[in-house]
Image (tube, rainbow over all chains, first blue to last red; front, side, top):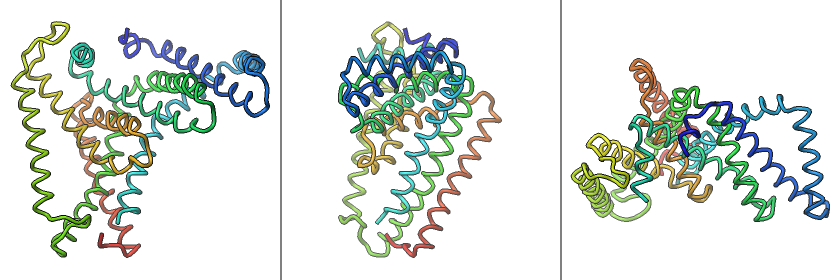
Length: 95
Length: 231
């Protein structure tokens, strides 16, 4: 089960990744919408689904490119943030 | 269960272990980062489902890009951590110099007590590693035999991850433990990663030494400029 994950094609991984991101952003955004605007969960889910479909239809190729870029940037920036905080802890905040 | 996990981790060859460590560490790191960003913004259920999907999504897209160039990512993590190690080494020298001058440690306590504690911890770790190597050759859960090479790799992974964990331990107030564990796994994978060519390996080791020296002198420069030479 894990072999296709780590040894499968990049295109398949990217497709699964973008799908997960799309649904994840939708769930979080729908929750925010229902909490801040006061819409019912079902209505906010519907709004988010419509918006998601529009975004997917209009900008799927751009979205794919930016997702690749953002995913890679996050993979590079998160360890950098941990190291920066460690450096700050050792150099600035050290007694 | 542990045997099955170990077999997946080590199969089909030990060369893949650092890559798997890096990728699993990156997954945990991304999940921790997403959870930290979304905490307080969404409800608990949305955080659980949406956060998991977002973490998985970032992880899969990162793997899709990084798998074409694990060399670069491993070298990046290696250099990043060695620069930080340089600063930590400068801090250690500062503490040692202070301990010799004052004949006491900055955090209190006697030098002899601290040294005996460290010796006890190291002896326990070395005995564990020795026992593991002695027991190597025992068939694991799926019938794969744990060879001496695998035992050595596992001991190297254990010792390296303990060292990285020890270094990032002061950040436990800023980050949750899983995030730091993910970072430790990433750096351990990068430390043990076998590069495509020996010349590339030498270049990365030399660049790591340069990053270590840079981190050391940047830390010293900051202390000198701020006038905080003594801990």
